[in-house]
Amino acid sequence: MEAPLRESEHIEFLSDRLRLIVSPEHTFGTDALLLAAFAFPKRNERACDLGTGCGVIPFYWLARGKDRADAVELQAKAVDQLRRSVALSDAENRLGVYHADLRRLGGVLPAGQYGLVTMNPPYTKAGHGIPSAGAAEQIARHETAATLEEICLAAAGLLKFGGRFCLCLRPERLTDAMAAMREAGLEPKRLRFVAKNAESAPWLFLLEGKKGRAPGLTVEKTFYIYDSDGGETEEYRAVTAAYRKD
Image (tube, rainbow, N blue to C red; front, side, top):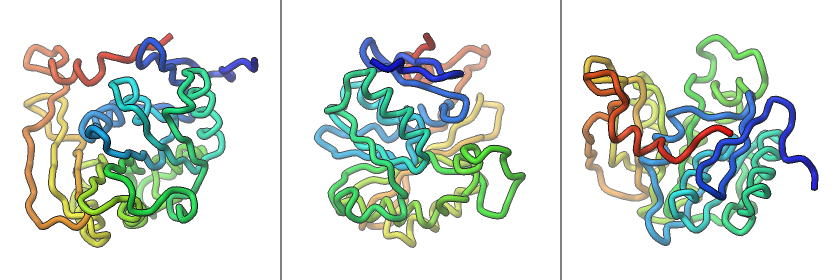
């Protein structure tokens, strides 16, 4: 059998059986774990993660009992990395990996069949910020491969009526995200901010929109990473407890 790891790669264990290969180019952060937990699929809810990268979001779901999920990724190296993770984890029947452009999913995934779509999108709007040095970093951090509007349209195309689209972004892009969701027919329904602690301003928001639903937004209590003593909060420990590095 071919060695599952390439140079500079390592394994993250999300459960006793699920092993996620991570590389410097295709890795994950706290934001992806928070999004995976915020959007966690309901029972029998067909789920897909767009721009999945190393695949941490669908792997997180599988590690916590989801029977199956799909994942879409544009970059060939990330797809190869994820497919090796799936093989290493004997998860071929649980995670469908699709090498595709999210703007062109016709004939790749069935339209109007998903109850949940997620994406941890690029945080920097096209034409803004300092471009990243590497191609993989540019796609991950800047809207070079798809705009926020295109992402929301892709999610809306996959979702059935009442289906959910969840994403995370920096607070300065909240109005952009809500406008893009509404333009795509996804009504913003649930919002949660994430802050380092009670004294800090939020650095992230988690937003859920539902296809075809009426207006009405619920703002949940802020998610804190650290408590007043500087230790990790119980809620944060619950989100991150299941993974460790080899």
